[in-house]
Image: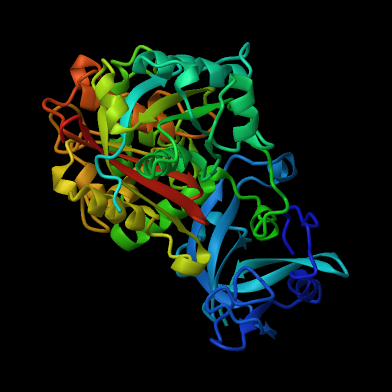
Length: 138
Length: 382
């Protein structure tokens, strides 16, 4: 869990499996049945090869920081109590890169390449927010 | 078919205002339309094509045609953010070359507070949920660039310093005071590694240009600017795998250079979209002014400083110091390139013998999806 605001984002039938999986504590993305690439952000088709058939796949929730920044000015009143916080592009173990937050007690310690594990902020039965924490060693 | 030499910019006007609380956006549209037409020696009745972005909302090119009283027979409200106007000039040139219109009015007008969220865009939930800011998305690119290539805050600051040296000669610049590298890197961090002085200003305002056929250009009294080449592109997560080290200039630049039959070495002056210092650095690399990863050393040592740097850029002070109307800097990039090619830039920053200029716009966000449009422009007989 993080102290960042977990607002229920607009959800559509096309993307609801992503949010529902996060509510249940897992990271899921569609994978193309044809070219087998992961699809970020989720769609009901493959934007890489155009195939119609995709399969929702549960991922490990492990990855690393591809890039990050620490935001010191809040964009929205909802985030005002949360600054400073880290915005990152995380590269998942399975290959896709996603925008998310990295939650840490020590933002100064973050670094590109740092190993991460997904954490889930539950909003409702239908929606959770996927964020990441530095992977604890041992 | 190429547009090379088949369209000319004959009028250009930049709104002198930076804070316009008493002018509505439609009024600013009329201000810039009137200014560009007067500069060209034309009148509203001569226009047969209207180009504007969709930032005002609704069916903007219809509403603005009606508001101005233009009988448009060609309209384009393509909105690719700050790069829209360079795209519009490319589209207008193609339409003129095809005989679809003869006198195109390309406009930007707007206020600093007119951005509206668009929750139905397919990516919205997958980004806004995490509290990104505009600055932070560019910071993600600066952070990765630093990691891969060792680009420093001091090197990024050189870009702001060059812009500020130019802005001191622009009587309309919002920030006319020269700053040092030290001042840039000691300004508050907004989103690591970007400081307040790495960011562009936020202003009201706008500008317009008039694009016409060669026949009409020849009949007009003012020095005209030849459209030599145009390219546009989008980068997004699908066509880059979210590689944050490059911008769509990597595609729009070569397309424009090929159409113009020119290379980066031919460019005397460059207007480079400067929403943030990192935007300039990445764009210079992607346009081929220096190899990928070497932008930091390229911009150091006064390369960008007019009139005698190797590549004088943004001689009006750019978005970093002069203005950034409605969060969109593309139009003013074109206007300063036109000034340089006409020999009408501020004397202290006029590039001697300027024959070929490049203007580059970008729009959207560099870390997610970004549009780009590149124009190569030349003097009348280029």
